[in-house]
Image (cartoon, rainbow, N blue to C red; front, side, top):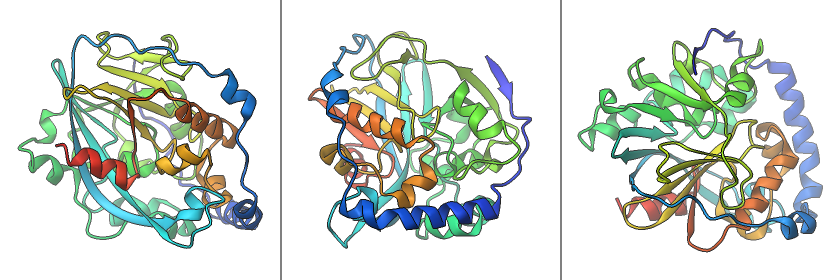
Length: 321
C-alpha cells in the first residue's frame, strides 16, 4: 500500500508543550521515590511463541552517529543514582539477500539546524545530541555505501531522532511503516511532541499492518521476507505504531532492535518505566509502554535486545561489525 505525505506540517504548539513539561516535572519527585510496580498478573499471563524458522540470515551493521546523556534515575524511575547515563543515537544497516535497508535512519549531519528547531523550545533543550554528529551519508560512505544503495527504510517509530537521516537519502527511498504510526504522526494539524515533519515531507510511505501471529511474547507480527530473517513485532506504547525488528543475524544470533520501547536495558532488568519527566512527554500511552517493558522482560534467553539509545548494547553490537 503506497501513500505520500500530504499532511499538514504544523509544528507542535508551544504553550501545551510547556504545560506538559510542568505537569511532568511536578509528578516526578514522588515517582522517583515510589516507582510504578510491576504488573504480576500481566507477567504471569505472558508466554513465548517461537519465532518462525529462519531460512535466510542478514548482516547487521551499527552506524553510531551521536552521543548524549540523561540522569539514570529519569531513564529508569526509582533508581537511586545521581549519575548521568551515557546514551547514543544510531542507525542500523541491514543487508538481506534480497534488499539492503536501514532500521532507524537516525540523524543528518546538520540536525541541530534543520530538524531540532521544529521542536518547541523546552523540547529542543531536552533532546539535542552532543556535537559533533556523524551524518547518515557519511556513516554509510565509511562503508563504501551511498544513499542510492539503500532500497528502503524501516523506522521503529517516527520521532525525529529516528528519521532525520532521511534528509540525506534520495527521495526514491521509501519508508515502510505501520499505518497507525503514519496516521498518528502526520494525520493531525500539529505534530505530536517528538515528531518533526520536515524529514518526512515528499516521502513515499509503504504502509502495512502487523497482521501476523504472535512471536515471542509479542501479540502481533509481520514476517517481512517470509523467510524468518526479519520479523516485525508490536512494541506499541511509546508511540501508537512502535515496532521492534527481530533479526536472524549471520553470526547465528537473534537480535531485537527495540527502538525507544526502552532507553536502556536497565528498564527491562528492573521492570521500570521512564520517570514522568521525560515519560509523560514522549510516551504516547504510558500503560501500553509499561506493558511492552513487561513483554521485553519476559523474553526467552538468547534474544539480544538493542534499544536505539542504549550505549552499552549498541557498542557491544558495534564491536562485532
